[in-house]
Length: 333
View 1 (cartoon, rainbow, N blue to C red):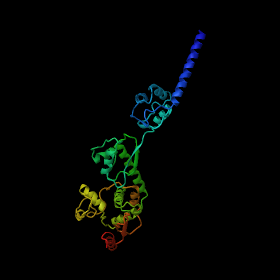
View 2 (cartoon, helix red, strand yellow; view 1 turned 90 degrees about the horizontal axis):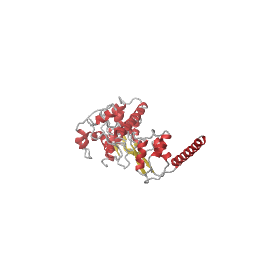
View 3 (spheres, rainbow, N blue to C red; view 1 turned 60 degrees about the vertical axis):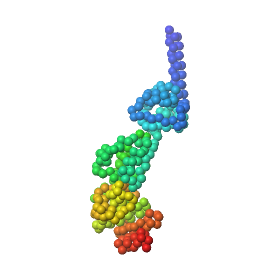
View 4 (spheres, rainbow, N blue to C red; view 1 turned 180 degrees about the vertical axis):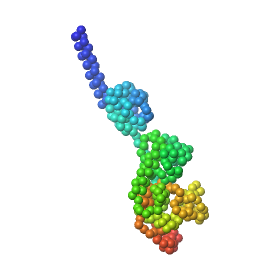
């Protein structure tokens, strides 16, 4: 009897060693990819067992149980992360499991550029093939409510940048990241602002930054443009800036500003109204925010485009000099 038991234990040990050896060999052997690259998606809440079956059906595994058992024995079965994964070369089961645990998912991106309106931003989100649209048809105020924003109007509240995300990320999640980024950058800039500025709040500085963004694309001119508008607010003197008029016209703007546009009153017509417009007019970049809060030390009150082809402006401290600059650069005299 003892001899029989000994034989059985020996056979069992041999089997266990063989299984362990096969398991190690399986875990280290690169998998043959059904295609290169091979992509698959892990939905939120998917178990390793269900994923193993899915990958076996797709041809990555010959059977689903070995990979599932590998995860169970390594205590990694519950650590897999959702997202889209891409395999560009053969990979071992152990490496695949590590990739799933690390959340090494495919990343795509969307870019919002400076000077873009919220309307254009939403159109970009809706047109992106990898973004899950959840806000289509939603009113702006409802979008802000979902973001937990305290502001009543969305224009200018989002920071222009390139945002990377996993395919299937919602438009709300991307807007939230952009909104929070703007809040951080605006608050940091507000904390280091120059003294004596004519703003009652960081939001007013954001309004000014959006005007600066639309007035010039030259980084070197932004502080000077900011100084002109800050000096006008201090006098007080109307801002008289065309971009706000254009924004107020909305869909009526056909590419040309006419005299009647400058004299027709709207909340955004800075030729007919004192002070800042009620909201930003576009998405300002960091350079424009910093210029609004740290303008150049200048007495300039006017500027006109030089039409040199480089986007530059001529600045003047008084109306007589400004009129001469207009005559030179705009009227060709």
